[in-house]
Image (cartoon, rainbow, N blue to C red; front, side, top):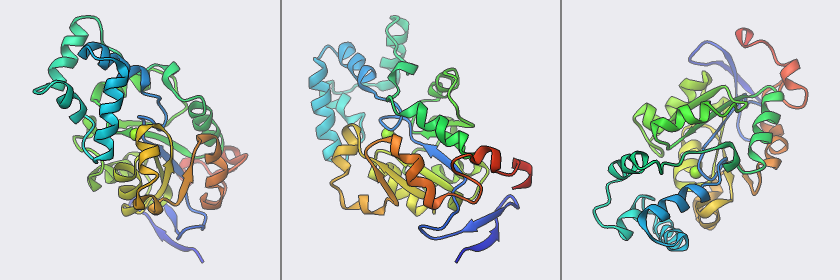
Amino acid sequence: MVEHGTGERGERVDRGVHGERRVRAVVFDVGETLVDETRLWAAWADWLGVPALTLFGVLGGVIERGEHHRRAFQILRPGFDHDRESAARAAAGRATSVERRDFYPDAVPCLAALRAEGYRIGLAGNQPVDAEATLRSLGLPVDVVASSAGWGVEKPDPAFFARVADAVGLPPAAIAYVGDRVDNDVVPAAEAGMLAVFLRRGPWGYTHAELPGVARADIRLDTLAALPEALRPFAAAGLGPGGAAAAAPAGDR
Ligand SMILES: [Mg+2]
């Protein structure tokens, strides 16, 4: 039984529970969900003057202890100032930013497939503000690009997920949020009333897959190639294969 209601913006929405058809937008975390950050972290190791494996291993310990990833820099270089070092790297011509080649092979095809099925697509992660311009410059098949730095609020703050819903222009119940972390993605997205999708890959994904909180995910996947099919039982009417053609124009929703 689907209960119909009116969203904040006056659009008709399906306020379903799991398994009912309701999702109209899919919003993705960026780091290790869409982007393989190996090259970016290895560049930081070079800058710090340690082997890449050393930084990766220290990061793994930080993840296991549930600490912020920037703690890895503090362990390797006490007093490390991330903003100052980023500026120094840029001044030295050694800055690195996300490029199209950094995306996991299943990422862009997944974005394109979901958009073709009629979903609104967003990117919103805990990212520095310049990452927004970088992501916009890559010609990705997305409708919304946002970041924690741009909004001034980081995951897992509930305010971040409220901003996601606002940016997409739909109520939380109409949004699927996809991420590789239980603490920053799955639990707060579920708490916000979104469909929570957990992706088990990257250093957080494999580690967090063993946490009890992973049970909060409505969908658990090892690859984004499986996402379009996995979303089908939750999709709003008119979305799915051939959905972009079948879906009503935005103004009629
Ligand atoms: Mg991530």
